Amino acid sequence: MSVPRSRVVDLMKAQCQVFATTFNPQGVRMGTKILRQRLKGPAVAAYYPRKTATISDVKRAFGPHLTTWDNAEEDRLEYIEELKARGKSAPKKKNGPPDPKAKKR
Image (cartoon, rainbow, N blue to C red):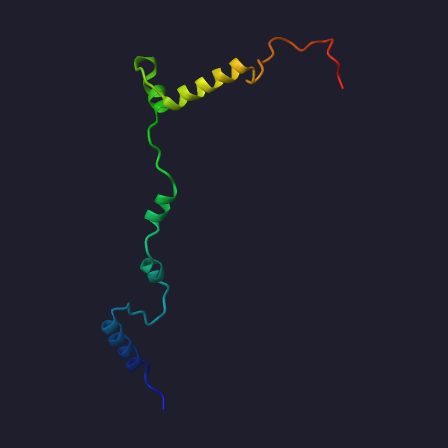
């Protein structure tokens, strides 16, 4: 003995009211599966680091009107000077056209 469709639909409606789900007797795609998921925005935003202003950004923005002190840059320049004093720095770049007498391979 089969149950009439109207009674099955009434049962589904009561079931949806009791368990607080959406009533969808036709089975139409509504996107509730996607809407129930946790939001991904905070996780995605936390993956990319936020850009903070650096001393070089301030120098670039204000130019010569503002005197700044960058410890990392000063340390780098001091290290290069030490290398130059010991003769361990990069060689000077060549100026002018190539030497025509140079041996070619």
